[in-house]
Length: 85
Image 1 (tube, one colour):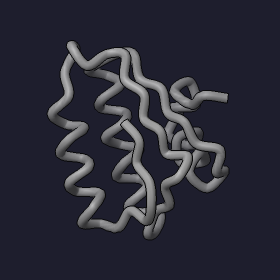
Image 2: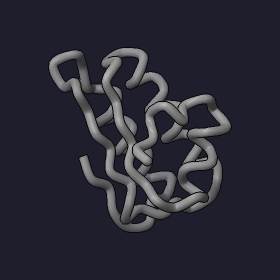
Image 3: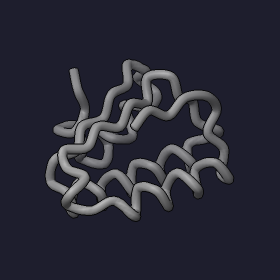
């Protein structure tokens, strides 16, 4: 799944609903955030937490992003293993 553009709270809530609906049959799952930016740290942290939940459910989740501002919350949350180099 590729997400591009500015992600505000409204867009994030719709996106998080989509992630929450994924199940084992959707594994492996790749989330491409290379063209995404986030309206504030809180919005990004909401995404990080849902990706954590998704990883717990699916087991096979990868996140793509070169932006250090996007990668940092994943590392801080102990999810660096999900980040593609």
